[in-house]
Length: 304
Image 1 (cartoon, one colour):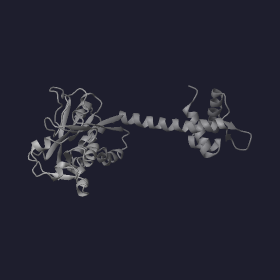
Image 2 (image 1 turned 60 degrees about the horizontal axis):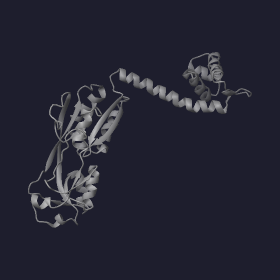
Image 3 (image 1 turned 90 degrees about the vertical axis):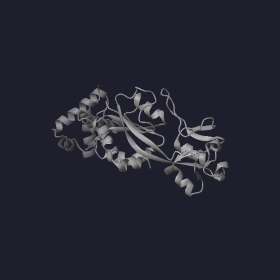
Image 4 (image 1 turned 60 degrees about the vertical axis):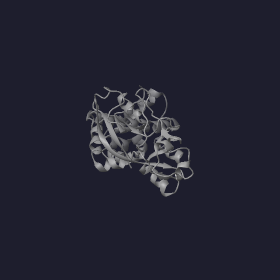
């Protein structure tokens, strides 16, 4: 390889300090060693990096280009060294967290900020799934930690060995419709036969291999399927259908008059949510998140 990082370091120091001598002092080398590094790099690349005709060595256009890009290389090399040291000390390179769409990624930002304060160097990857798809992300190896599963075990028996789970908490639900929806003025409590005659809005299960599940739908009921919980809320606000919503998502719309809460004769007021993880992932980042998830305030924040 023609490009020597030591030479790039020297180039950077010369540019910042203004002379070969002061750069050598910063690098802890004699000036002749710094001069040798630069001349060797010029010879290897067959270009002049400095214009030496004046009293002060000035970077040529080629030298300036090398320095600009070279500084990116120096930063990347420094980051790589730090990451390798962290991995050697037990921190994962990356921790992948699958969230059910009912758990907003933004609710995790405070926790992630706390984690970044550890200066672990572990990259965090968040992505959303729906219903069985959250378990599937974990079982397929796409995720290390799954937050917001609707069941304590995946849909297919015998597939959860090597995984553990804990209760995340109870998610309070409210059945709501737009003020223009026919059910908005219907007598309460609403019987299942009454609800069945109206289209439901549901978030589609993202599982591809596990059996898919539905929540709160009645047999024979027409369904509008949307990709996320935010879309479900918006569809119900638009009067496109009815259904249960997390209270934390519905309340602002109820307060503003965009949704009307309705009492059901057969109501599912709460739903238990879980989090699960791959027990083979034993790094410090995973242990840090699992320890924080044991705190009531953290779990409550995730459920809004």
